[in-house]
Amino acid sequence: MAYSIIPLLTGVRNPDQGIMTYQQGYGKRIWLPIWAFLIQGEGKNVLIDTGLDENELFVPETFEKETGLIAKSLVENLEDHGLTPDDIDVVVNTHLHDDHCGNNGLFTRAKFYVHSDELAFCKNPHPLDHRYDEYFIENIVFTTIEEQQFQVLPGLEVLHSPGHTTGCLSVLVDTGEGRVAITGFCCNAENFPENGPAVCPGVHIDAMAAWDSIQKIKEMGVKILPMHELHIKAVSA
Ligand SMILES: [Zn+2]
Image 1 (cartoon, helix red, strand yellow):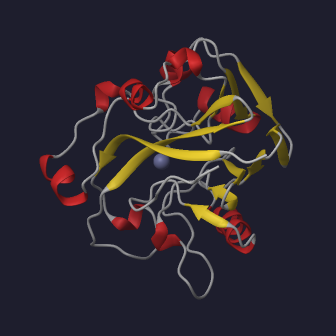
Image 2 (cartoon, rainbow, N blue to C red):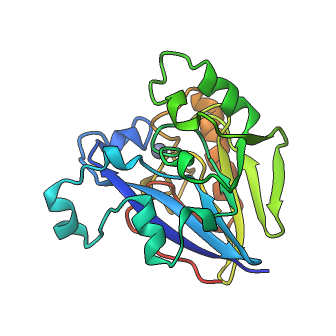
């Protein structure tokens, strides 16, 4: 079984590269795209994350001109692929920062997955991590994952990759282009230099765990889609 992966652009921010790469890359402004990923196969429509709430969708004027990319609400993105929120069967939240679950409330028919540690943290966050807002998961009935690795569907698994947050889930997908890993932690291509170890995510609650998690993904030797990389393309089934 092979799935396709389509990145959907739900927003953009303009922070410093250092927010992605721990102790590296400071002083360089970057476009930070906020993707949700539509995965299709086995007769199912799966969303990895639900992106940024459209009320927070403020796109700087120069973004489209510079990148050729257009950020839209998640509903508009789905429309482009002939889908409505009711067509989504499964949603996996890699973690519950506001830019990864901002549209959860749209999917009243979907089955939601999240790691149990992530859900617990979101309900009682430490003030250090200000990116949680329980508002986005109100009324969501989650199936919680406690396993190290868990099969959501045949050929679509999640892997506990803590450090960026406590319950990050990376997603492993069998596609027509081989196995692909969507990192569950926020990073971009700069976190994966060709030589040497991967670079720890710049935002983390446990830097050593985050380092271990990113090495694990790199050492899998599969194609990697870094969660906030600007230059990513769809993957075919
Ligand atoms: Zn993020």
